[in-house]
Length: 128
Image (cartoon, one colour):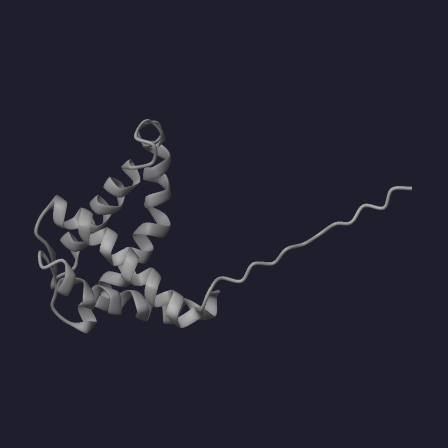
């Protein structure tokens, strides 16, 4: 999986570049900006998001998991506040931008890498 990280990073940057065409209130100035934003989004989602999800678990359970979308939108907005050339107009723009970004990234990754491989391991018990 580590050898695929540069490809996933590139896919996520391209997804960010495509995002303003679908969500006009999200703007990305250049490919370099998209690369930096994709890297920071990856780091934030890897390091900060699990802690926030854990701390907000009661709210997430009460909303049947829908609060995860709010967390994703807030983190998307948070990253946009740090990257020059990557702007999000407000919370709802970040909310829908994060959803569309995830869908574009997922679809592009599925096209590049194909369907996930599932391995089934069977243990046959011999009764005797």
